[in-house]
Amino acid sequence: MNRQELINQIKTKKTFLCVGLDPDVEKIPAHLLHQEDALFEFNKAIIDATHTYCVSYKPNTAFYEAHGVAGFQSLIKTIAYIKEKYPHHFIIADAKRGDIGNTSGMYARAFFKEMQADALTVAPYMGSDSVKPFLTYENKWVVLLALTSNQGAFDFQTQRIEHVNKRQEIHVYEEVLKTSQQWGNEHNMMYVVGATKAQWLEQIRSIVPNHFLLIPGVGAQGGSLQEVCKYGLNKDIGLLINSSRQIIYASNKEDFAQAAATQAQALQQEMAIFVK
Image 1: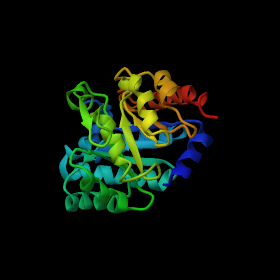
Image 2: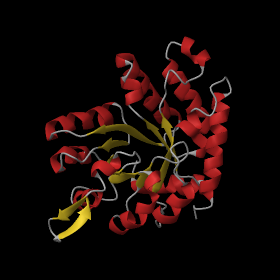
Image 3: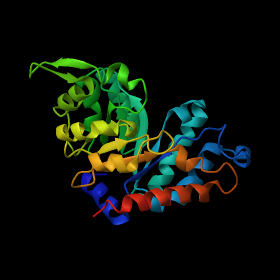
Image 4: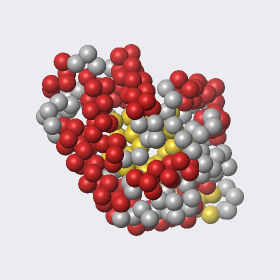
């Protein structure tokens, strides 16, 4: 999916919601556990119930990898189902990959060619040669970790370092934003910025005014949609707001899909006022 197609979907549906598909067998409704593929059946019901209210889905691969080969099959089936039934939805594989170049090339092949995800979250710590292999695929996206929503983000991401070109101190996450723009652009690169770091968004937008930002942390993690929109919106909206637990675990009973739809619709209606 290219940038304009994503923008068109946001404006048509009046939403920039991304639903996180993180199926935990200890939390999904008990009646699904008797199914041959409980993870996929859970995802399928969530997708069918929420597709009207979102433009994107983000399966976190850890929730599938934990079940070995069977879990990977559930992930593959989930992506294939979205591609078949709802082909205009943007699919982000949340795998946080990042390794030396030839290894990254294999990761890119796995997620972009074999699984047909539209985007992949990537860790920038190993630098340009670990990221560039992901950028060689047309209409595929790198979602680079910049300033994450967890408390440990303060361990490194907000530390101040000397910027090599400007001879001034900047935060590590700012260096990531500045340097990575030499690798990709707003047509193939997004950045992860946690909703719990909304107060940093104004500075982030001064560095990457046109890029899309993937914003986790709204809802269960305490992030504010209004605060994120106040500082993070750009002329194309430029945000994908991810919500996982608030939506997919709205109920653990047989009405779980309808409960998820209710939560997704509520977020869509909040977002609609920002979409012109």
